[in-house]
Image (cartoon, rainbow, N blue to C red; front, side):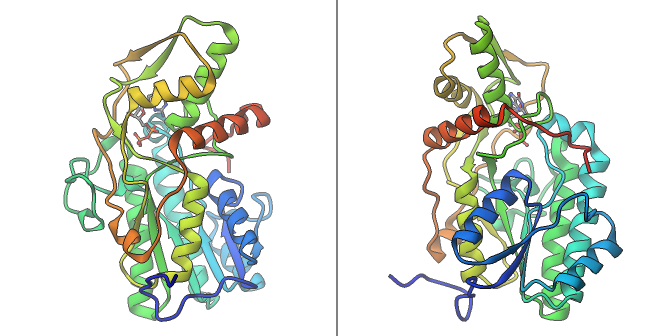
Length: 327
Ligand code: GDP
């Protein structure tokens, strides 16, 4: 079956040298798995060899390795608490990382670049589901505005290099993600990793109750990370344009129901209580995914199946985590 496309010709990934910046993270590692399966020659740089916040180093690395394609999956990321605790990391470091990579890719004459944003770029009270046109139509959610501002700048950089220099730089905006390789940090993680850890530890300790932050009422949309990686490969092949694309399932679930699902997957049978002293964040952030659907892509992994895979990964890795502030 032919796939709809807004690129003149599908972009060929097989045999291409693709630099995945951020390959150690949950998103970057999923993209590496996907692109290698597609026959791309994936390039990576270890943290000890390349500090992405240093412009001269990033430009020198790109000049030396000359990739055909760059995927910007590198970023300082974390949950609602981490965003409030490390505003400099989420704003300054992310601005530096994306500016260095995008400008360096331009200097190194990279043929195609994919930038990964986030659904938190949209206004806190954007009409639901949120279309790409909601960008910059209202105030942001304060609990993650540092990160959101950096990601909005990344989208605009891609558009600017496209306009001024004709570069084929594109961007996707994923919804909340989960899956293998997540950061299971006890306080700085996103909600899926946080709850997998907390329910697992409560089950192991025989604890009578588990605390979930906030009221349990906010609605979130969760996408399995391998589905995101699949969407990234699809977008690289089939999309070229200033318009960026939402990536999600289009389905939402209340945090309370999500917590119950995680408890079931982990096998925890105690009570769930809510700490309403903790922030809820945005009340709702469901993405309108029709633009990407019209090109022919949709998510495949049901939430419960994806959570089972994530829990297996947590058990296999011993719940490893890293600090947001780590270089
Ligand atoms: P957000 O979508 O940017 O708010 O990302 P998060 O994954 O940090 O939080 C999603 C929702 O889950 C928010 O309403 C949180 O208050 C709620 N939540 C409940 N328990 C936790 C937890 O232990 N960690 C985190 N990060 N969020 C939690």
